[in-house]
Length: 485
Image 1 (cartoon, rainbow, N blue to C red):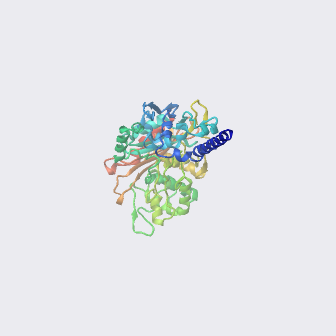
Image 2 (cartoon, one colour; image 1 turned 90 degrees about the vertical axis):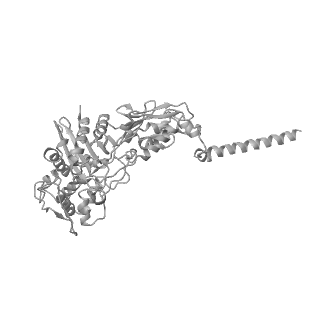
């Protein structure tokens, strides 16, 4: 009998060992496959079992959580949803996450290991930390000024602090309320279908994900390239630019909207946006130097993140001289996001330094401890300090003497550049109205804000559309909001 008991005990021990080995195999080796199985709802239940961390603007949360009482318990809520949607994106139980809700999901949902005091223990026990908060760089007053300035028009605004790269405003219109997308029921499905059917594409973040022909605002880049390359040494010397200008190797003649552009000096050509002068300058500078300046200012950068991805702005690297002439006035295949053009204005304002733009100031644990701070960001010299100084002089002249008078702010120094970009087959589309600018208050040591505005549907009357008339007042409102004491 003792022998039988001994055999039974050994057999039970073997069964127990096999059970433990199998449990270890499932828990350690196959855990990921079970977690990723669509039929497994436990990760989703755990994910939404606690409130999501907040996204903050000016110290105040613009997001929250609502207890739905359902199995997926907490749903995302938004304060001033359409105002901040181009910053927050949405967090939906059914459709996933976008923008900051996506790029900072680990912190907001509590799954990022950096939130855990003992990360290895959390990994073993599958414990979940409370969601942390994301503190943005957005200036609430500037954001609201941009949103109200655009109103019912289609367009976008991006504003940057030149000395740091902090993004102060990021607005896209028409916008949408992310709140109805948060759940997984019929309300979310109806909202998703409606937003995706909308021909105005309200979920498109035009400030960072849509590229436009920048039109005459690109003349900031062309002028900087000409000054850096030594093609122009005197802002008031004649440029030997015929009006009209025949594109090299073609019979196509380029003309101007303004009068007096023939042989115009760079200063007056910049103030009154003479296409012929800048088309010829681009050809004289040459593709190599034009490409180098555009690249230094951020064009053709496919890796820019703020922290979510930004669509690459483009300047052709292989064109003939006629195409180069058109590219140099912001047409042909040259395209830019509003954020990119704000970066150009910021580089001029900051002595030629281009600082990587960023949207997250810091992330913090639920108890208040800092997880991450923005710290230093990459900086490069996009143009010489001397060129930047002369560009500030040119841009100031546009506001005081030229087409950008609507951006003038009493008591402040404002520099700007207007643009009206043609597009569509045979340039048949409604022109885009652009304005890029920077501003410095009378008590400020340097420029405090750089802004880019684009308006897609600026006017019902094609001939009345202008960057100075349609986009400059919006930029002025944003700059005033930042400069306000």
